[in-house]
Length: 469
Image (cartoon, rainbow, N blue to C red; front, side, top):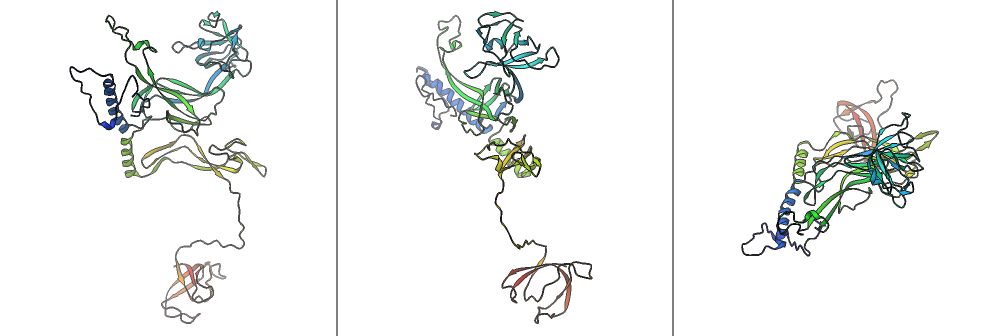
């Protein structure tokens, strides 16, 4: 099974093996029911669901969509660690069902608290905000540094602060920040052979930058939950002798919104939802992806229509970084001195090939780019000197000729209106060089005359005569 947690251990002894081809557990009267039989019964049913699920859906596919969105305007305010000599508790300012509204005592700015982050050894406590009202001057749109803040509810650190009374102070430098975050709504995903519900979650990519790069998705966690940890697992049969007795454990699968570096391949317990590069969503949010059914539809689409574009991709060549040449500046894509995403190569030596957003069907599968992407190409730094070189090109119809005596005029001819002098065509091969044989059957004009093979100057040398009839 796709499940990673090993349950063939004490006290579960789930020894289910799909290669045994057991499809039912047949209980018999007069024989004790084994715990492992009950567990194996679930494993048999789960294996059937998994086989059908893998036929229909790809791993990590969306079953009931939970909207995934990127915000590059995720505002926050950093706080002083103490207020009135007491350590502040950021969680006091967060209420998911009845959001706390905070107000700047000096600026008058109002904001709703939508999240928080506890302090660490290197960071200040943070409140994530949705600003509701500008300041009393109708201009200020964020909290000021070292500003006292009030809340519309009672706040308790050690001392209780009533509603409308200052209960914290913003940090002394760059308190108000703008960063980026990912939010996913409640949905269901096909993960490890099961249909797992995800809760509404928000992942802060950065509290201070809107140019973050990351692979964003779910980290999959399997845990065993016991009645000792969760009292709701005890017997709830009120009035019976077994009430509140401890019973079976539970296997719990949790999807937690998280991020990985773009070059990370640690996908054992990770399902990617989208990819963000320098603050731009590079791939569409994950949608329902069908497995065998999807392959069948793709094959039919390709048989009917082949490969095609819905919105064509446009290609342009740009400087990788700003480049000044003869007083003008070619604007680059990246910052000077930065390195490539795939290697330790200075961008000064590269060009950036930009591919515009677009959509295509390749082998029947949908391929969509919703943001410009760039391909690094090394600039040419080598050259070769050619003296008196010849560049040849084909000019259409030609005939091989031998026994050449002179060459036809293929440029402007004095006194004639056409650039190509007329040549006569005869029925017989020439026997005496310079004299025609047979009788004339047509005319042509020579456009080009090119050596092909043999010893030049000899009668056996072969030339290509390009002509117009």
